[in-house]
Amino acid sequence: MNTDVDTLADLTRRVVESVRPVGRFIQQERAVFDASRVEEKNLHDYVSYVDREAERRLVVSLSELLPGSGFITEEATAACAGEPYLWIVDPLDGTTNFVHDHAPYVVSVALYAPAEGLLAGVVYDPRCNECFYAWKGGGAYLDGVPLSVSSTDSIGKAYLHLGLPYDAVKYRQLSAALLSRFYGRVGAVRIAGSAAMDICDVAAGRCDAYIEPSLHVWDVAAGILILHEAGGAITDFSGVSWLDRLASGGVPAENHYDVVAATSPLHAEVLAGVCDCL
Image (cartoon, rainbow, N blue to C red; front, side, top):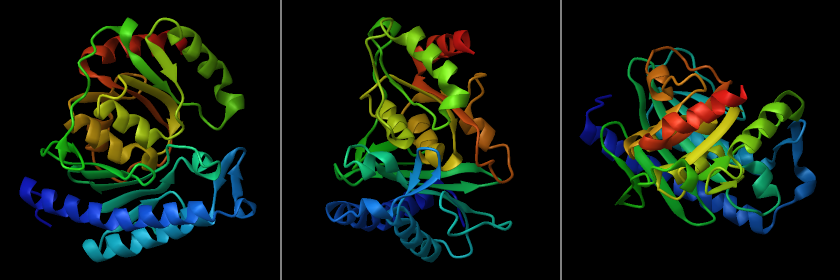
């Protein structure tokens, strides 16, 4: 596949067209949702029949869009085996929110090439009917409108989102330290429950920073590119860019994505606060 900017722009728009019907399916199912069919993959980490069917539909449509591509998916309905292009798919990021009929929950799809890194990212919020997307070198957009991070440059005024990992035993102390470090020292701290949406909120200027340890690649891949193209910064807790790490080649690891996402002027100060807690 040619990966020039124009080709990626066209492909990304076609991904958007593939994702929207899946989002509509998710919303239709929410109206008649059967909570008794929810399963617990790990403690407090849920999966539903809606996740699995949404992922199946995405795999079918994305396979048609780019034949011969591989997949890294949360629910393991497809796999990769050395393909030059990989779709990284989270069919329903924020399942716990979805189960409780509470926003946000989103569909997240990224296109990755081991030889080139992240090429495209799409995050669709079916509840609000908003689609965030970006392609490499082409900017980031919300339903056709260019995205840009906020102009906030003071940590004392920053609106910060904090994510809490499912493994409370392992991350209770760190989560408490992060809350203590930032609560009362920034403009506000909120917990939303969808990593992909949290990153897009930074890209859209709706919040100024987002912190969460121990995420998965399908939670963050699309958001990483969207935020980068919107002018923000997203690194691990050591300050290494996730965009650069994913451009280093090979199949991405699935786990252990510690994330600090922020506007570029705020990132160093937010990261320093995180490092105080480690």
